[in-house]
Image (cartoon, rainbow, N blue to C red):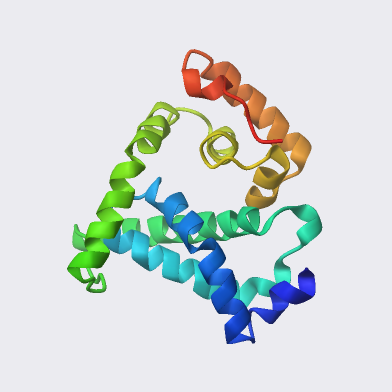
Length: 183
């Protein structure tokens, strides 16, 4: 699998197949966390550009392709949030978005609307420590296994289990927190 992943960086056919296989999942992941269609579109593009540079880092034994992609997406989202905050501080408003046609905007708005419940859940989890919240998001909302969530976050599976337990204990009154998790 490692060789196959490294191949996507140099073989446009392999990259296109990889992109088509995962673009919807990455878009959903980002639409859960961002409510602006331009930013979602830009971040999706940035995730797949980053994949071209880092395909050689994927290790199948550590988790699925999607878990790895979610880790890349989280990093791109964090980078974008830092960049946006700096720009906001300097200019008091975010600018420089690439133009989208009306069909693109309509599709992204539909996706964002569909992910509204997940954003409400994120608001309920806002007071959790970052590490606990990140594991809870990936396991409960994004449906990764604890091991895959650990991979996406760059932590050990045991650490992820402890953080998930703490987050669930803190939020046990919310019904979604105790629902089943993927194996």
